[in-house]
Length: 243
Image 1 (cartoon, one colour):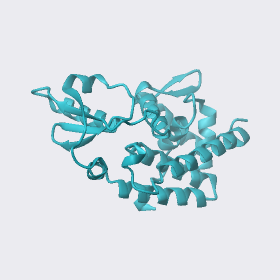
Image 2 (cartoon, one colour):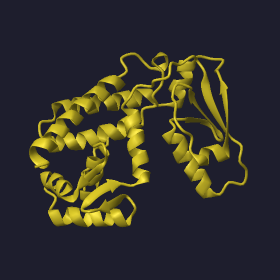
Image 3 (cartoon, rainbow, N blue to C red):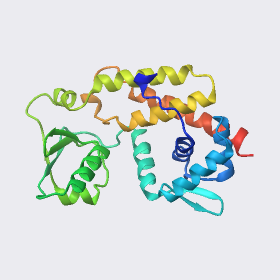
Image 4 (cartoon, rainbow, N blue to C red):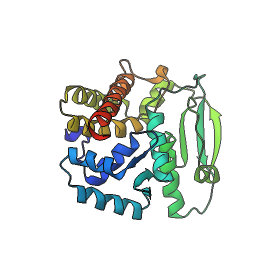
C-alpha cells in the first residue's frame, strides 16, 4: 500500500476529500460530521478541523454550510480535468514555454514551477518546458508574465521524447495497482481512502495523445473505476448521511 501513496485520513483530509468529490463543493457541517463518523473521527475533532480550515483560508462558512475557497476550487478543476480524456485532436504540434523573464525572485520561480506542473508541462531543461499541444486551458498570470510560448515539432520520435519527459511506465504501474486495490476493497471507508489516492494519481497523468502512450495504457480503466466509485459514494451519502 505504501507504494500506492495511500495516506491515512485525518479529519481535515476527510473534509477536503468529501468536498472535492461533490459538485457543487458545499455541504452542511452536520453532513461532514457524519462522514467523519464513518472513519471513527469524533464530532468535536471534525468541527475543530472545520474551524482551522476556515482560518487557514481552505473553506468559507455561511449559515452552517462549508464550501471550498477559490484556491481549492482550482484544485477541484484540475482533478475534474484529469478525469476526462483530452478533447482536442492532436496534429503533432508541441507547445513550448521558454522562460524569458529576468531577475525573478524565488517566490516567482516557485509559483511558476507549480503552475507549469498544473498545466501538465514537463521541463526539458532549465528554462524550457513543453508538452504535446492537445489540451486547452487558461494560462495563469504567473506563467504569462514569465514565459514566451512557441509551437514546434521534435525532429526525432515524439513518443521517445514523451517517454523521456514523463515516467509513463511508473505511472501505469501505480495506476494498475490502484485500480486493483479499489476494485477489491469491500468497506466504503477503505474505498474512500483509495479513491482519494486515485484522484491524486490522476492529477499526475500527463494526458498525452494516444499515439504517444505505451500499449495497454491504464488511464481510461482507472478513470472508469473512479467514476463507478463516485456514483457509489453519492448513493451512499444519500442513503446513510444525507438524512
